[in-house]
Length: 544
Image 1 (cartoon, rainbow, N blue to C red):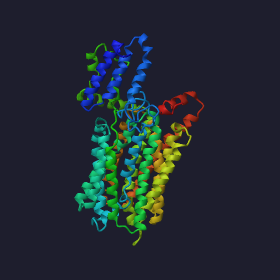
Image 2 (cartoon, rainbow, N blue to C red):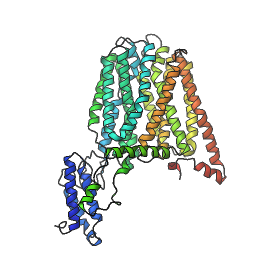
Image 3 (cartoon, rainbow, N blue to C red):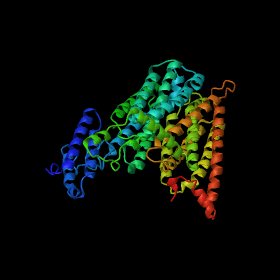
Image 4 (cartoon, helix red, strand yellow):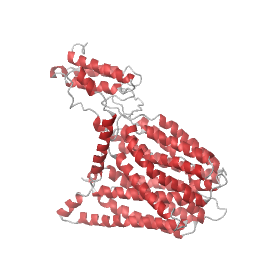
């Protein structure tokens, strides 16, 4: 009765309900339109009427209580991240403190299952064993390079369509690609089918940008730090669990490698099923600005309001997205310090994947005959130690804007020394130890780069910057693969290749060490002018 006594509000509310019902019939977000239209109606109400608006709030709260699990005093398990002052797509019209739990649990489950691949520590032995009968030369020069080259060309379209498709379809595509890859690994034979399997695998790897960007589009900003740690921990736990399971089954149970491949297929299939239940994000990282604003809206009648609630055309959306991409690139890379952290993220990722991809061939070359391989155990220890080091870095109180580059340069030089030692020694146990140290040193350095870059970025730029870094890393990896592995004139042995990788990390460490020393010395000088000059070089998020 109160609404009917207010003609202005009741008229707008009637249009809002009608528009909401029409959009619901078309499969669109009618609840969001209802809320925006109601807010617009209230904004047009006279001051004298706004005094009585709490009655309307209670009426709206009563509307939410018609659905089970949405009462104000009930802790509902909301699968949407859009709870708070506006209703979520799950139907909650009141603030919900569990809005981030559902998507995070599902995404962590997906990440754990997709990364729990017991066959990977023994993939080279599986391909060169009695099941596939491929030679080490074929695996080294014809099979593994397919993953590198395919990722180079697949990253660009994946990065461009991820925002348009709103992340979830790309995550489902990643799950499908993992399933297809390991079906081909299990049941395919010959070089060509194995190459096709690694092509599918490269599609899944290219889709990682959707996995890491999804959580930022579904939860509120105050949960970013918490959900990021959970999502990354799920990946490391999945890798460690898969490696540990593989090592126990091979060493203690004598389980054939074919069974490990079957377990891997089951695990990625569970991940695919889990991805289907992920909630669809309501906003896009690059297109958040194209929503309409309540403060800038004037709704004198229902016809103008109907025009306001219509979506932009596809052409306008694409045009805005690419313009936003260009502006975001310019703004994101405007800081010299951020550029340096991005350079290390790309070059370090390139070197890491080169070492990790060919380490099994290296171990196969130096291990004694009739030796029981402990690849899975090494992967387990290295993943867990890397995770512990990453968590430790997150709790170290240090002015990373000053010391970060010096830390990167110094520890990258240690990584180069570890690879040199691994290459010079023919002892398999020393090689195992060196590889564990290699991952333990590398993983926390990536965390340093990630949070230093993230401090300067808004919600709309994570996928862009991290995707560009991944693309640059893949380009460098393709060049390194073509130069070191596929050059027929060189014909380098696997040990010579690792000598080059050690030199590669040593070369990376030099500019970061020099710049880090200069930054520290400049910040320690008493001159205010020099300190001000150095402060302009810091990431914005690191400034006091």
